[in-house]
Image (cartoon, rainbow, N blue to C red; front, side):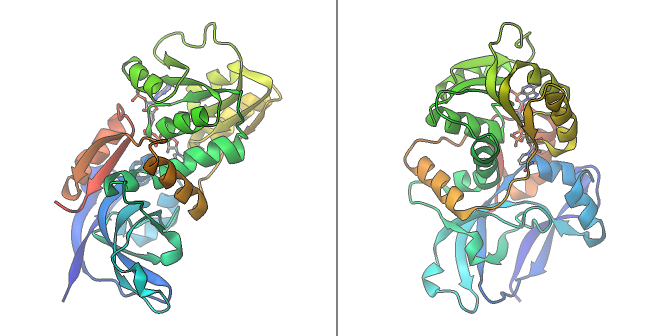
Length: 318
Ligand SMILES: NC(=O)c1ccc[n+]([C@@H]2O[C@H](COP(=O)([O-])OP(=O)(O)OC[C@H]3O[C@@H](n4cnc5c(N)ncnc54)[C@H](OP(=O)(O)O)[C@@H]3O)[C@@H](O)[C@H]2O)c1
């Protein structure tokens, strides 16, 4: 019988909980397609969930073994009832099963066809796998929650990370003045991606910084709280890491500044728009490292230790 590989989370904790297992091919329900995954994206939430932290871990505690992962890019290899056969062979990507189902750490993934976008020809599937969750988060944080507009000063904390490097380009493209905060070594890249100023978070970077209209906090905790001091009274704070969102929001509210947390949601139109920007060379996806799928433990350790510039992905084609 045909089968496929899946990286199971067998128990919460260290990376030894990640195990590659084989399963019979999934059957498709009405409206679904089967993707042969070429690449899966890795996100910090995967690492936190593996460690047993957060809502997705709590909700799935009784469902182990269970597969992590919300980003997949590959090719449609089967269609279920009611799906046009023209989908067969199409290169596709999507943010799938967020936040409770996940399941993109596998060599195939069954999903509703409506969850998928066709990857434009000029985009490599590795980039397409790196884009959905981080790109949608960046877009929604800036424009839905932050209401970023041309001419505004936007401070991005964590600007070299998966979400940050995309947010900085989207903000610059929208005509914002972007102040990007990351480690010193990322300065040249941040400026190349469109930052007006690149600041090193290990320096006294807050000193002398003029107030901003929008703080996009991708780091949270004390770093997020301290940065609130630089937001104009009429400004706005969007804090993305959920674990410390209440603390950062409280710091902003104590200065009567508008502040919100957020949870990314799937949006086909926005993902298509982001893919088009990449295809048109208006948005660059930095892939820091691509690991063979069987080296998922190494990839998790890399993300956990920090110093990732852009995104990490898993390769299922090797
Ligand atoms: N709520 C949601 O829906 C949602 C969605 C997506 C992500 N998130 C969360 O948002 C956060 C960012 O995600 P991500 O994928 O961009 O993470 P990431 O790729 O791990 O990026 C984090 C970046 O933060 C930088 N950094 C670390 N400490 C810093 C500091 N004190 N000041 C400024 N920058 C600092 C690091 O830069 P260096 O490498 O240069 O040190 C790193 O590049 C994570 O906590 C993630 O879980 C939430």
